[in-house]
Amino acid sequence: MKGLVIKNTGSWYTVKTDDGTVIESKIKGNFRLKGIRSTNPVAVGDYVQLITNQEGTAFISAIDDRRNYIIRKSPNLSKQSHILAANIDQALLVVTVNYPQTSTTFIDRFLAGAEAYRVPVVLAFNKCDILSEEELHYERMMMTLYGHIGYQCIKLSAATGEGIDRLLPLLVGKVTLLSGNSGVGKSTLINRLIPGASLRTAEISDAHNTGMHTTTFSEMLELPAGGDTVTEEGESRHPGYLIDTPGIKGFGTFDIEPEELTSYFKEIFEFSKDCKFSNCTHTHEPGCAVRKAVEEHYISESRYQSYLSMLDDKEENKYREAF
Ligand SMILES: Nc1nc2c(ncn2[C@@H]2O[C@H](COP(=O)(O)OP(=O)(O)OP(=O)(O)O)[C@@H](O)[C@H]2O)c(=O)[nH]1
Ligand SMILES: [Zn+2]
Image 1 (cartoon, protein in one colour):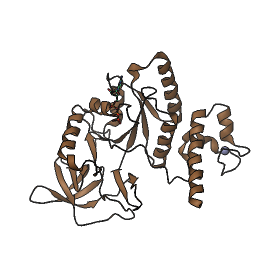
Image 2 (tube, rainbow, N blue to C red; image 1 turned 180 degrees about the vertical axis):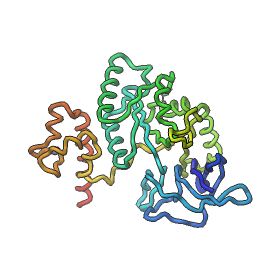
Image 3 (tube, rainbow, N blue to C red; image 1 turned 90 degrees about the horizontal axis):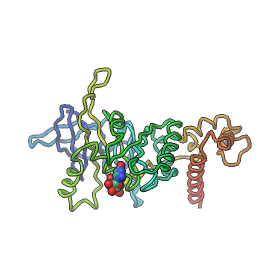
Image 4 (cartoon, rainbow, N blue to C red; image 1 turned 135 degrees about the horizontal axis):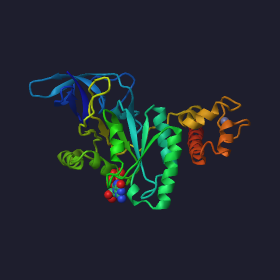
């Protein structure tokens, strides 16, 4: 039997099978995944093979190849990492122009990381209900900026429900990683999208109270089935899931090489094709088409600054590694 892992608590995995049954499962034996040293071989979002047993539970006997996965490296130096989620279709980055203000550096770092993982990002501009005229103007400028680069932007209020009708269709049938700084309204949004979700979360934390601080657990929250969970091709798909994993602030960008960085800033990459040197870092080189585009306002100053700050990190790391 096949199924989708929707929850991971310690050594137990909750698997939703193709016919909609939910089965508590454990890993059979100690199978390892090629090339990954992780503390959890199976993660939410994995498609797995199950062998059911008489007690009504099951063994996970195989995992389908992953399209992608996000990991958190262990803070200690064991070189082990923890897989937070697999097979993500997209990320929803919740941002606010105020209360609290999300910095463009934070947004751009997140976007660059997502590009590195080839995960599309939708930007949700939340709390439009409490913004002043001036703040709304700034929000429009931000939405225009990121919209031009190619990111879908949705203006919404998780509190009042405004804009939710535009967001929902983007989530149907997809596994969406929910991200954003503390206080931007992620929990409020989840409760808006999935009535009763906070209640369930509370129950879960109660049940596992003792282990909460040591066990990282992830969960996919199922969106309520809408009327359109059948694709145009007539193939049915799941109603969509949200992954809300506390502690993920973005995609790991530690492995990005400085030469690669340009390609993770979509519009910078486009202009860089006209730079005189193919290995141009767009900092000081003559004939740099990127710096020219910044001067002529084809590339926004804030995006260029974010690029430079990420480049700086890389150089600094290199320096540290060298000594
Ligand atoms: N006015 C207004 N307030 C909102 C909106 N969305 C959330 N809030 C408020 O903002 C505060 C933070 O919201 P949360 O949903 O807890 O934010 P979060 O992103 O889950 O925060 P963390 O759990 O710290 O990551 C709460 O007081 C919410 O009521 C909104 O659209 N408009
Ligand atoms: Zn250049």
